[in-house]
Image: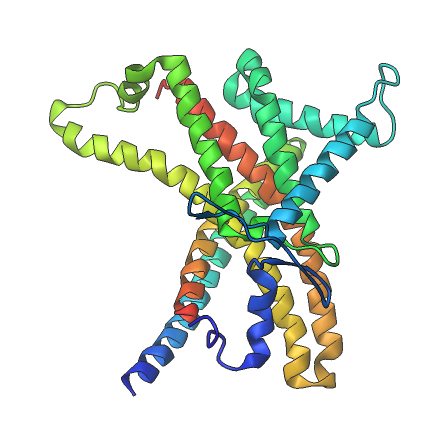
Length: 78
Length: 265
């Protein structure tokens, strides 16, 4: 009974954790996109630079979100 | 423990497609591979290892063909390879390391980038497996980057000069016991982040695609159009993410090497 409850809590927390990670990534990358679009609107000549910076920053933030996903997967597998 | 991982046996196929096996999986054909134990360490040949060899062979053959000298101006595929090399030199190596040093580290950056790219893309073709979706592979790549980071810092600044240069100048002496462990930790978290970022990105893409296809088995025929469409969209995203993660790994390695070599804070 205790083992079953522990497993159920594990699945539940993995789900909540993954949801929170997606939320954090969405908010963060959305703000990067907002800053990038505003920058391009102000200065269209810098589009190439801004686009590359935006993609690199998005990849880094996604890395952090995927750290959380890896922890959630560990929870499910235990 | 691993047997009862996914609950019922239906969703076991996701785990089956992700983990490494002592066999080469070509569809339903399982070719057994030799188990080799050297000095108590398991050095068997596994599916992911074979994929890495295929990636290496692919890179060697492609680059050997496309860099054959046919004149000063390359054309066609050689043009693409030259554009890639120039891109890595001008956007990754030189801004972080300077002209001379950047050119010296180019072989390392190019090898890292092409190898990670080839491994990522090989996981997307049928009968292929993502070698970089295995944490041991990405840990090894991150360890190589770590060794190059510390090695280049020591070569450039001297053994003690490198560690002394980690501490920001003008620091009150009382903060030293706090800063030293912090700086060491900072040295270690960078390659750790490189490892996990690449591993999680590659793994997540494949798990999503497998889960979407698995929906067909669970929900029946009604899920087929939705599943296939979303799985296709995820495949395209995976191609993009493969390129992006190879580039980000190389770029961050270059940034960290630049920080080690030019330690002026």
